Structures are given as structure tokens and as C-alpha cells.
Length: 567
Image 1 (cartoon, rainbow, N blue to C red):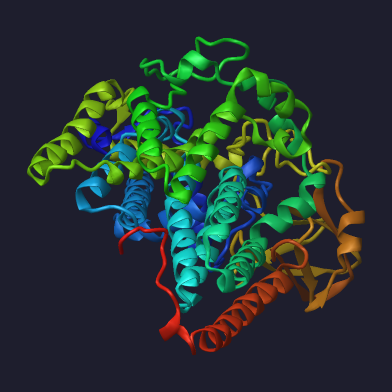
Image 2 (tube, rainbow, N blue to C red):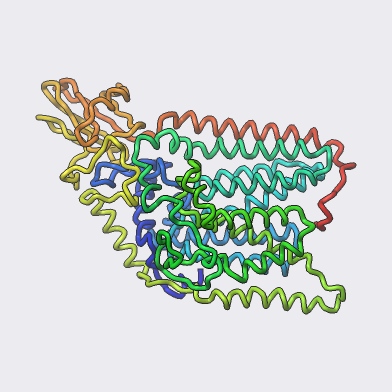
């Protein structure tokens, strides 16, 4: 975080003020009582946009919680969240390394991880802070996977590491699903690689518990990922990975992996002269390769290095046909996103330096000196990345973000690259809502009543004859509308849309007044998914508690094997 401290303000990244501006919408919704804001009513000209039905929410939950602590400064809250995730990530790497190594090696591994070039690219060039948050969770997933293996091998209780693994797997999905995909694949590979080393009677328990952790993570994270799959055909999501966003056009060239240059440009198509860095870091690569050699007797380190090399190869030109034709990879947009998971795999390989031992105990000072000089030399090599491209002081960034928030109903703001989340039934109207009412009724007045807000509309309407009303929000599955407490069926709402996709409503005559209530209640089946997630947690904990009691009855005679690695 040093470049930010030196700059003394909010850096100019590709995202500019998008994160603090969106955070204002997210926090405003939470202040209005919406626990998980999915629909942001002020966006898209004031007609609403389903941002967090599709966009990963974890970073904004953390930043929103910190905004109050940061005296209501959204830009400072964004960077407080980045600092928090940095602490989480480096602590995870240190804890992972300590499972194998002593303190000096663990500190070296942690410092080298902190200097990983792609972390700086995400923070200070791309500004993709959700991706940065996901990257910082990956070390903990690997740490809990190792703990699960060791405890299973020793016949010890598995609830704690299994719960940690499931939580990590679920949180990385909520942070950024495109980092979660390769992260989950890596964990599966490492678990499979470690299984043969487990004592005979513990393999089934280890695999079953690992599988249960994955199932639990799927169930819990389904509150986010299932609506994405369920509703993506109702928006223009394909725009986000077509044309200039086609993944096969953004492969990495071999020399870019080790090119020391560090810039603030963007990924270009079919050209190795990108304006931004896609390097592994030459010192990182060399030290990781040596670490893998020193730790070649450790199944985990060997498997991590194999995954490391595989992911590097997957980014290079020979793999372009895979990115073009494998449907699962198309939404990935940029193959170089794999650098986010590669950062943790490099750290795993660096742990192998623990197994470089000098025969003469008197040379231990030389070993400690080497463990200091290696990260120091790496820091010097990467010193050109410790800088910020322009910066706006935090009060100015806050003022600009609040101005964006204030003007949102008067402009077409969606904070999406190509309006990929715009409902297919909607289109940009010729005029935006501005400060106008959220309910329009023909030949009648609609007056807001107590507890009315843009997030939960409540109006009193008086009309002598049946009238047509229009809710000034785009329709999307999940809207609920009540007239005098009676629910308007969704099929009625979806069949009475205006030309540009706003919600139409037929009101009966109500000379004495009727109440119209409308709010976005979440994607269809939202309540059921939360129920399934809660039930999955309860079943998981119950089964693990029972299984731990059963399996550990004879644990006193269980071998404490751990592939020869000291505790």
C-alpha cells in the first residue's frame, strides 16, 4: 500500500472513480434498509439498473461497512477495504508458509508475495479492486486445504479446516467469479495430488470432507451465482466478452512474462507492446522454480509448481484456440487474469526454500542473510512499480463521487463497460427521470407516504375512474408491486411494460384513495436459496461434528504422519 501513502490521494486507474461512486449507491441502499442491494434505482437515467444481480458484491459489503468508520468518505473507505484485503492476503500467505517453514522463510515468502507485479497492476493500473479482493482470499483456501489433509491424515477433527475451506471457496466466488474458477480448479488439483499420500484408512474421510466443503461453498455462494446463470439471458451479458473483449485476443506473449517494464496503458489486441505489465516477475519465477526444486520431495509443492506452469502455458499464444472455442472460458475476457491465482502458486513454490539446508550449523547466519537479500533484491528489481499514475486527494475524489451520485438520475450512468446488464426489454429513453416522481398516474395525483424511498416505493393514489399508472423503473424479474395490499402477479407486470421497458400498472377506480407499493425484492427464488444455504450450513456442521466424534475415538493410535514435514 506504500504507493498510495506516498501519492496521498486516490490514484487515476482505468476504473477512475467507479468504485467510490458505486459504493455511494450501495451504501445508500443499505442505509435505507436493503441488506443486500441488488437493484440501484438511481442509475440508468433514474430508471434503475440490476448491477448487483450480476456484479460480485463482496468488496462493496466490506467497503460499505468501513465507510462509517472513514467518516463517510467513500474514496477512503474503498482504500481502507483494499488495505484490509492486503492484510488478509499477506496473513494468509504467512500462515500457509508456516505450515511447512520456519519464520525467516515464511517472512521471505510473504514479502515476495506482497511484491508480486500483478497485485500492483490491479491496484494502481486497472483499479479492479474486486479482483484484487478475490486474489487475496486464494492463499487462505490453499492453507485450509493443507490443514484439512494433515488433520485427516492424523485422524483429528476436521470441522474447523473444512469450514475454513468452504468459507474461502464461497467468499472468492462472491469477490470475483472469474478468479474463483481457476482457484477452485487449482484446489481440486492439489487435493487430488495429496490424496495418495494420506494413510490408507483416512483417504475416504479426506476426500468426502473436501467434497462436502465444495458442495457447501456452492450452496452458500448460490445466493449470488445462481441468479447470474438464471437471468443472464434477460440482459445483454454477451456484449461483455465479444468484440474487443474476446478472450482469445488478449493472450500473453512469452517475453511479457519477464519484461521488467511497468506502465499504465491497457491490454492491446494482437500486440506484445501492451501498455501494462503482465509479468510474472523474473526474480519471482527464478526463485519459485528453485523453491520447487528444493522442495521436490513435498507432494504439495510439486503439485503447486505443476499448476503454476500449466497456468502460465494457458496464457500463451498456443492456448488461444482454447480461449476462443471452449465455452466455459469465453466469459473470462482476459487470459492474463490467471496471474491473480498464479501469485499464490508462486508463493507455494517459494516455500520450498525451507528445504535448502546448509550442512554446517555455523552457516545458519549465511542462510538468514540470504533470506533477507533475496526479497531485498526483488524489491529493487520491481522498484519501478512502486508508483502511482496521478492522484486526486481524497476530499476531491469524494466530492466528485457525490456529484456523480447527485447527477445519476439526470444522466445515463450504469458504470458498466457496454451496458451489459441492461434488461433486454429496456432501452435508453429520450429524457431521463431526474428529480421527477417515481409513480405517474393518468389524470390523478400520487403522493408519497411514510417510509417511502427510492428502494421501497409507497404512494397514496386517488382516482375517480380506472387509470393507467407507470412506475418509473425498468422492469426485471423480482419486482413486487401491491395495490391496497394485493399482489400484482409478475406475469401481469411483464406483459404491461411501456415501450422502453418501464413498469406499467392498471389501477382501479379509488376515489377514497388506494395504496401502491413497489420494491425490488431480489431475483426469483431468492428466499429459497437463502434457506438452502442456511440448511446446507446446518447439515454440514452436524455431519462434521458427528463424523469427528466417530472418527477420533481411536485417534490416540493414529499415526501423526505428515510427509516428513515437522509441525
